[in-house]
Image (tube, rainbow, N blue to C red; front, side, top):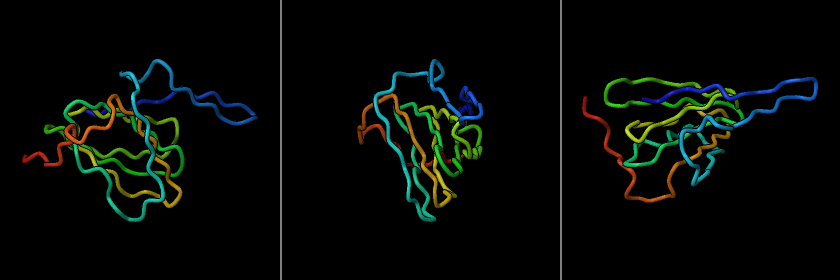
Amino acid sequence: MAQLLSLKTFTDARGNLTVIEKVIPFEIKRIFYIYGVDDSVRGGHRHVKTIQAAICLKGSCVIRNNDNETEQEFMLDSPDKCLILEPKDWHEMHSFTEDAILMVLASEYFDPADYIYEKYTH
């Protein structure tokens, strides 16, 4: 099941510093980011092995998730929110603001065989 984490953030008069340390439940093997999205829906898959951590660094987007038991939507609208997606989490991202930058940390290198595009049937 997807899990929303709050990343440790230090704030003072100079601004904010958010730390990603000892909270990601996997070794990071790949980082990618999505930006410049129009009104398209991104994602639309789950994985065989890959665990992901999604952080909207700027702007906002919504991640719809279905783990075959529960369907949820998560609003990522702050860079201190981190959504952990397990391999079984079929997800899609939508409602990107014009300035949105969604960064994703992944536990595996890209492998087309790791993607399952079929939605759960129930």
